[in-house]
Every structure is written in structure tokens, then in C-alpha cells.
Length: 192
Image (tube, rainbow, N blue to C red):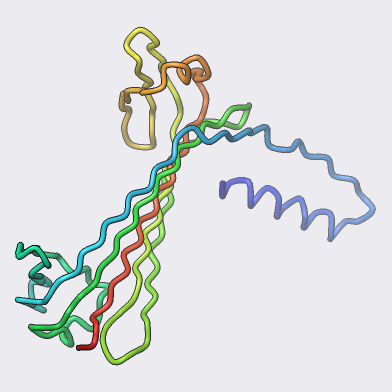
């Protein structure tokens, strides 16, 4: 977590600047255990039927004859180069990892996110957009009878069902929960 980076940097600077003095700092008391992971991938391929650069909407005709309207994110900068009749392939992969944190330093609250765009060179538009989001929360309630856990985040407190009843025995009020989400969208316009 970012708050530990600055503590370690300060310690390192103190050790480098004052090598004669011994600085003793307690190591963070934090253990992390993954409790759930999921990945979902979807793929869309079709022929461009309509593309509107103003509204950023594109309609594809899929192989089964159905139509799919897509909102093209602003990170796609070459939308005006996509033409009716072009073939488009888009793959979206979403992953989620939920971790349980225990120890004295568990239970930080907050959120961190980042978006990166990688444009692929070539005659036609292509590239990848990656969104990463990490949410930090704290367990404030465990209801074994109802099979739920209550988690307080930076802005809200919510109750979540727990599918694995055995996991409820491991959860304790005060434990931290970290949810890491990653969404990757790769797309390309294929040359006819």
C-alpha cells in the first residue's frame, strides 16, 4: 500500500544520511490471503454497419445476424478512420481478486485506480485499454447465521453474501479486505 512506501523511503534516507545512528522501526504487521478470484472474457467480432464519431457509437453486425451497438471510449483516437464495411474484433477480459488482510495494520480504507492506453501501429486502428482499480475496506460485521459479511469502504458500508460458509469462520471484525479489478479491452480493425 502506498502509505508504507513513504515510511520505508524515510527509513532508507535516514540510514543513508546518518550511517552512524541505528534506526529501528517496526515492520508492518500485515498478512494477506487470497480468498476469491474470477476472470471473464468476452469476444465480439462483426462488420461495421454504422459509426458516429460525434456520439462515439458504433453498430456491428455479428456473424449470427444480430446487431450490437458499442460505445467507443474517448481513448480510441482513430475512430474517424473506421468505415462502414470494416471488420472489427474486440476482446474484453475482466479479472477480480479479493484478498483478506489480517494483522495490526489491516483495514485501511480507500481506492486507487489507473488507466493505460497502448496503441498498436498499423494501417488500421488497433490497441488496448487497461483499467485497474483497487478498493480497500474493513470488515465491520460478520453474520454467520445469515451468511453475510459487512464491509466498510472509504465512502460506503455494504453487506455481502459469502458463498463459502467455511470462510465465515476465518473472517473477523477489523480484518482488511482488498478488491483488485482489472479490465482489458483489446480491439482491432482488420484489413479486408
